[in-house]
Image (cartoon, rainbow, N blue to C red; front, side, top):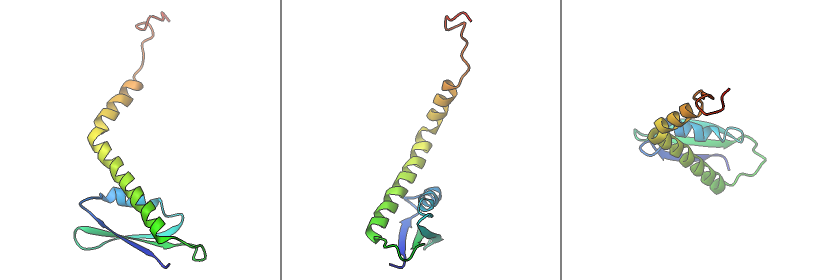
Length: 104
């Protein structure tokens, strides 16, 4: 196997998700991201070690799972990012021990 080419829709996957998912494969593959038409992007994965057999179907499945995960993270952050910030701010808000009844 020489390389794996994956064509992705820009409508489904944001640039950040494509970059993050592709980065997860940089230890095993030479990676390339390039535009493919106006609404698509092409990711190319080429094995670094040619002697090591790579299963293209398994690699494609891993990549698609990773990009879905990365896009979901972005979508959740967009939907619930403000809530997360509020929770973190509250969690690290200074506590007045006198008000808590500890009398320190």
